[in-house]
Length: 114
Image 1 (cartoon, rainbow, N blue to C red):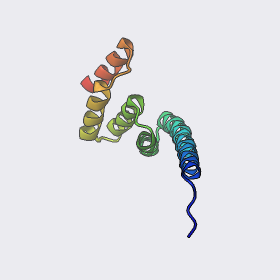
Image 2 (image 1 turned 120 degrees about the vertical axis):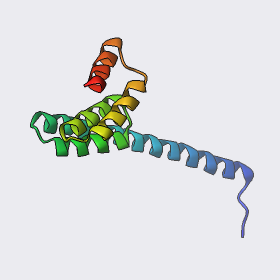
Image 3 (image 1 turned 30 degrees about the vertical axis):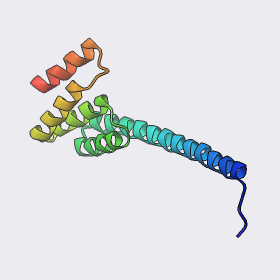
């Protein structure tokens, strides 16, 4: 078996790392896109009164890209479905998350109090 030189091996490994990083970024972009689509589907389902479909959309969206705002909407769907324990748990986690403006945090706090 012929040995490839060290410089060639280093070059091959560097190319693998670069291609792998690009693939990982593409996967992240795809997850972001799919999560956003599911979030919008959840909002539309909630507005239509289809809280079961909204819950599935928000849960799946959150599984792809965990965001506090998605978790809040998931919890609101659970509330509409009478799943109060699950909703309470999700609202507590959402409220503890960073990134809320003071007004948004107050809304989440009100959701929790409700």
